[in-house]
Length: 223
Length: 416
Ligand SMILES: Nc1ncnc2c1ncn2[C@@H]1O[C@H](COP(=O)(O)OP(=O)(O)O)[C@@H](O)[C@H]1O
Ligand SMILES: [Mg+2]
Picture 1 (tube, protein in one colour):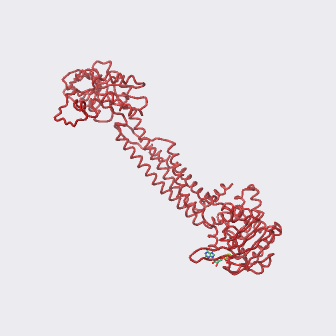
Picture 2: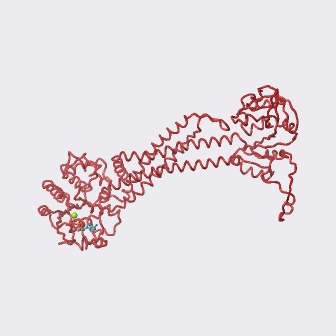
Picture 3: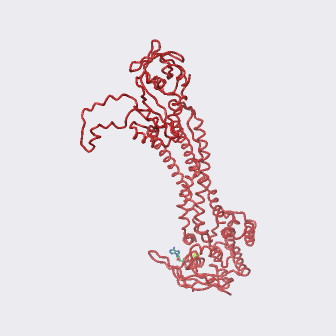
């Protein structure tokens, strides 16, 4: 299996009156098609690590390589392009745009990429939503959906441009067991069928155990 | 591909805030509408006035006086000397322009220029037992007609009658009424130099200006020269140019050459043109103020949207939208509000202008009209739209720049 992502000595310090070290000297890699779970005490730096890997935050020291490319040297637009094409982010809160329907929300990254025709985008977005049992709800807005449904729309959106790596930060934190189970089943499905990688943060040891590999972050360090 | 998407997001934001959007659109519309109506009215009046002045009056008038007192021989011969001349008694300068033929000949030599001469004098008119003072203008109707709109104020008779009827006179309607005389009546005219002449009314004029209607009369130039005992003199030379804009240059050239005071239409109306400048400044200031208020409205709604949507901005950025995509969303909102406001403002402006055009007034005088002068010009519409669009874009640009610089991680950290 080839290396998809490599973290090298990642350190993130927030400067202030008292400097806070969120992440310190973390190195590891994720292979293509690998399902990795991350656990650790609250405030340990799991989210901070995901933001660095997801290229929405820049490390104070160290770097993230994606398919061998050192992202530390890239400009803001180039990072945005990598986020659009290669990465998919799922946050603890669904973070959908409230003015847009489920379908439109899923189509947002496709529209930004602008590769598919409008018809093809609609088809692909509908298929993704159907995979998460949302077929009857594609024209509803986030306000008309339940928490579990919203989170699944957010996962569908993360998958919109067929990313190589899904980064999910406690995606099941607000879901009941049944919904949480279906989300993890979806991740397993992505890994098995699309050769994509998934890195998911969770508090639930049972869910964490369903991954191929398990990392633990304590006090900003890899334990 | 990205512009339609940004437009989509921008549009949704505005549609979700219908009332607030509508208020900012109305603000722009009022600014645009008022500008259009004000500009139509002010420019309408100004260009009408200008046209009237250029059409009706001579472009240059050479008078029988001097701008500066004549220099004394001592001053001419000893320019460096410090010299004060006391008790200078002006030489009894007979009224009128001496050697006016030389001037008219010179003027006729210039291409396209029309010239007429007039001699002005005081006469005493008697009809039956009533008598009145009048200022008589001695003119050559055919020449005069080429320089000014001679016949516009005529309400009876004809200026050509002056040539055909011996000792014909045309008088103001007020003067005729006060004398109790009418068309065809014979009057006795006595000049200040004591010459007596029997004259016959061959025309009546009404300018609407009471002083003129009560005090003016026209006769042939030759007759007035006889009455005044001023052969070969005129008191005024009127000039019409093919290009009225050249009047000022030619006037100062003539003044240098012939020393008589030559006044261009621009100089004669300098006072009113100064008023126009002030009017325009007031108009543009008013509209600028309205536009600034409208721009604040736009600034306000876009800032509010950005404040409320900072989470969405963070999402879009983390999904892979560029900074410029975010900026585009909010600038597009400014453009949309400005454009809709301008279009609505066109309707408002059109409506206001039509209303002004329908207003009936009763103005007599140098300008006679029963309605307000309105200048319908698409340029006003274009200018107002450009102005409002520019204001809207600036108002949107400031918050849009801030929106684009949102660091998504800071927002996301704060929320999760
Ligand atoms: N902007 C910030 N300034 C200072 N400290 C912060 C900031 N953001 C997060 N932290 C702190 O950094 C630590 C790591 O947070 P986080 O990565 O969210 O941990 P986790 O996701 O494991 O709960 C926490 O103690 C948190 O309070
Ligand atoms: Mg966290």
